[in-house]
Image (cartoon, rainbow, N blue to C red):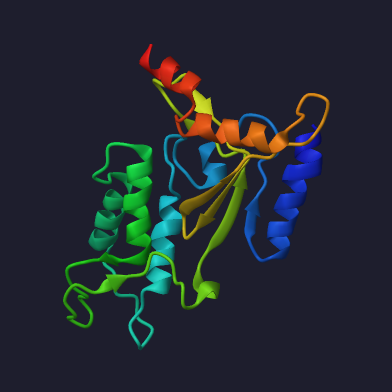
Length: 199
């Protein structure tokens, strides 16, 4: 597989050299969701990683984690169920949370409506960086039963980047265009995909 050898694997190696934790599931269709830190292939965030990361990066000045499990439950719910009708609107809602998420109270200090860091922009080294290849996502009711982006990049368990690896060869004259078309299909924005979903 030229894409695997010449594009995907070198990129994973480069990420690892930059300090990313890499989960290389190899080629083929994944059959075990636990290898990608999930309980099933419908999950799109890595909830366990997200919860642990929030405890790590949200601490008092004395270093004590202050978010409660219930507050994290509410944040997970807010991320997974944004008040949006389209994928673009949902992404915009989650993006806003990356810059400003709040909970009702810091139960350790008593501060009202404190900001919660989903990503620690001031101290990037405190975040959890993870790359997973062949990240299967089941899509019942869609044109296909599942999609498998080549690589998904997670920061603190949140999927921030989807990478589609393409190699220029006799079958792919324009790899950038082919990758773009595949990403459009994944997000339901290609005309053929929209037609398949409505028929």
